[in-house]
Structure formats: structure tokens, C-alpha cells
Image (cartoon, rainbow, N blue to C red; front, top):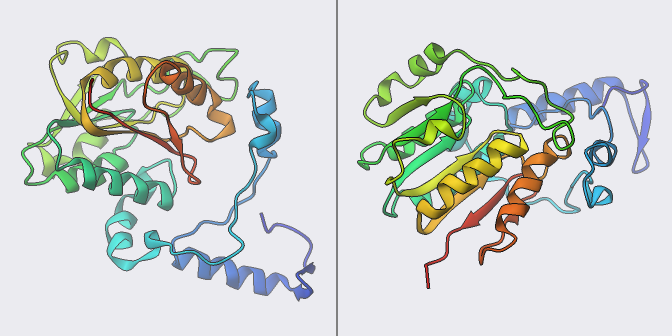
Length: 270
């Protein structure tokens, strides 16, 4: 993002390479990451066939806004597992806020797509003492074969991570974390009668996202939360297509967040 010539004019000021380096260091201490943008997001969206490719834009507020993910109480929890998640600090914070809400509702928690167990660790901490389980669904062999038309930016086997490492990371939560190893949707077998207060769906691709919606949605308790990790990211447009397709005839509608996530709150049945 800042990998440019040594001097560049911003808002009337000359910014030197040293100033940019110092700025990046300050941002890192505040919990932000500065990295090259690469391909423009609208270009990625267009390549993925996004219906509203022109709407994929970098977001920045004109004014400073309250950023609670930078607070020490959250950072002290997040930093130890930051390297074991594929998301940002902001996304992890939003995940934990929704989970804090859901832990007071009837039902267990579920996560489709465990990867290295970073987000699962945050969820298990919240569930400690609640009596709830966190069902963790993953093949631990990486992504299944992507849909060529909907998931052009992913490869089969991408994001593979060893089960043993995730189990070790969550060993202090042995009474909470319940690993279910296999491919979606077969891995849901045997849990047809389970009710959920919270579901974190982080599987990137169209088909497993749609299958996760089909499994979790009818089992969500009223007020329960479904969080979709990559809904707004152009490279994971297949996830958005699946979510929009599934909820097209439902009373609930996905609510996009500026973090790239989206959430759905389950309404009471008529």
C-alpha cells in the first residue's frame, strides 16, 4: 500500500520514506496491518462475475471512529492467536461481539472452517463456563474442489492445516471444543437434532457455504447469529452468491459489515 517512491504528496504534505515507516509501526501497535493492495478489488470482483462489481471499493471513514479492537483488553486476547487466523483484528473483534450476544441464547455454537483454530480459540474462551459446546467442522485437508465459475480465485487443498495442531491449540477447552472431521455436508451427519445459538461460516467457497446455510439455518434458535467471514471480499464472491441465494426467499436478510463480514439474525418462527 505504501510501497511507492521515496517522496509522495498527501493532502499538501511531503511524506518521506522514514515517515511512512514510522507510521506503519504506529499502526501495527494499534492493531492494524499495512500491506500492498495488489489487484484492485473491483477488478477481482469483475473477474469473479460479481453482479455489482463496481460496488467493491476500499472503505475509509472521513472522520476518526471508535475502534474497540485496538483496546488492550481485546488485544491481549487476540494477539496470542493472531497468527492462527486468516482474518483481521477487526473481523475477530466482530466475531467475539456476536458470540457474546449468542452465548445467552439456547443452543450450542458451530464453526464451518476451522483452519488453524484461531477463531475457535476466541469462541471457546467466550463459552467457558456456559455449558455449551462448539462443534468444529473441517476436513483439515484444505478447500474442496472449487466451482470454476463461482470460485476462480481459490485452489483445491488451499488452507490445509493439521488437525493435531488445532487440537493442541484448544486442549484447555476439551469439554467445549468438539471436532467433527470430514467434508461438508457429510460431516454434519449425526447432529440433525442439535440446536444452535451461533454459527461461524468461514469456508470461502460457494458450495460448502450453501450447504452450511442449509444445515445451520433451520437449527438456529430465535435471535441466534450466523456470521459469514468473507461475504464482502471480491475474491470470495462465491460465498456471497451462496448466502444471497439461500436467503432470497427467507424473512431474514444478510447485513453486510465494513469488515467484509455479514451476519444474519434468526427471526422467531410464525
